[in-house]
Length: 489
Image (cartoon, rainbow, N blue to C red; front, side, top):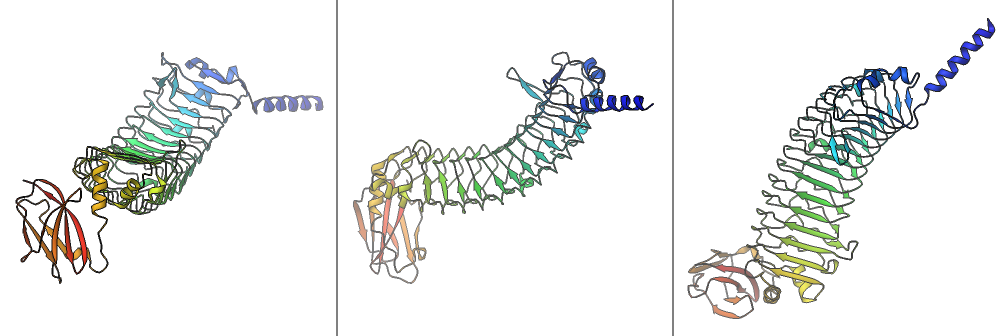
């Protein structure tokens, strides 16, 4: 009897020992029969050391994973894709740990292989840890991520793209940290990021893209990202939700947000350790929201924002550090409503070595301090063309800078002077509160004085002036105040 007991114990130990790990080379399951007979083919196998692939593309015969309900641990990747009859992941409810990637939809020979009829992730309710990436891709009838509710740690990237029916990220509420990138892209029914409200840290890039996304406010607890920040959603109306970010350790790219009017929500970002690109935001009228920004690296590129009238919001930006190739660039182009470069006044000219300003057809005020200093000291490459008169060439801007060099404002507030209308046609009115005008001089942009008068009633006849841009200089008590004037017929 004692010998029998010893034998039974030894057999149990062997079985238990075998169940601790199995299939170090992994397993590929391509038929329903393989899944149904898994426990017969691999008795006691609960912890798979290698990768698991579940795919029956193109036959689509797998409809149930119940034969895998003994699994608790997968040391490698779990890939599920290429299924047409699978509607849920029931059968994987006992899997607590995946050491590699979990891909629900994956790439095969360069093609996206999804799960055409998967409606629920509820079978993953026991999962707490994914050591690598979590992919949820090409699952076109999946509406939410309920089933991942116990997942708290993602060691790699979280990639959700494209799932056409996905309306919510509910199910990710316990995720607080993502070791790699967070990319949410091209989920055409997704309007918000509900489900990500407890994420505090992203180790890599944050990329949010989509046609229907209107809000990113669910990211309000996000404190840090280790990479860049890229936002592009044609329906997005606000950047609110990123208020806790102070540093972006990579590129900031705001693009193709057709309904975004300003950048409020980025107010606390002080440093961007990469280039800043703001382009193709058709309703963007203001850069308000970037007031906290002091330093960027490599480039400031603003182009194809047709409603942007000025660059206010960048007033505290002082430094553009050199990038990998030794280039530090300011490039502003194809912003058809832009009339002035004011807003970049505090950039130190010595911190950049490449300036390109072109194809801004309304831009007539380029003689701001950083431009004048840069050109007068020949600090690097400069390209100015196809802007409005006054900003149409390096020579024009230099002349305008020289014409403004005599501007003095030490005793009189410029706001008390009104010069109107502007643009003007036949007459120009000048009013000064509390002072007598000594004289009014009008110059061309090249600095040639073409008229000088002492208006008796504040009205000046300019009917003889040719259409174009001029500089009006008003002298009051030995103080000169200059403004640009556009004459139109």
